[in-house]
Image (cartoon, rainbow, N blue to C red; front, side, top):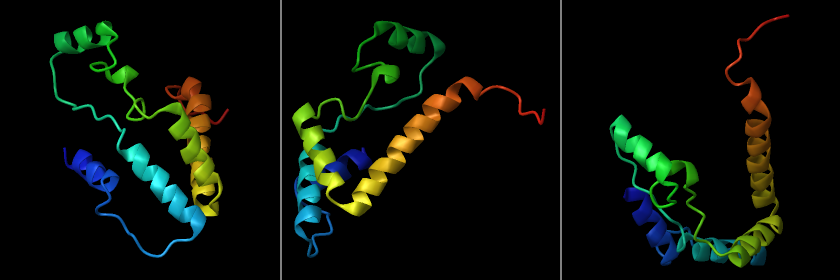
Length: 120
């Protein structure tokens, strides 16, 4: 709930570092604010095994954590605009590269995740 309140404050224009910015940084900040207003939060709570199985089998995006994405409600055009704004700023472009690198590493490393480490 605290995170949701912080994002809502950011989307409404508060609690941001509104210092002097150049054009690219100001644009990225503006688009990020628009995106923040669309974020979807899912409350996580502790449940018993039966409730977890029911949730998993429901395939309902509002209930199933496997299908959850906080970015699901952001329109595609706005996501594209955010990426383009980030690409115009070197620091944000490096952050995008780091995220893509982590996603690729996670995907490629998944088959090896539970194998024993060996020297041979």
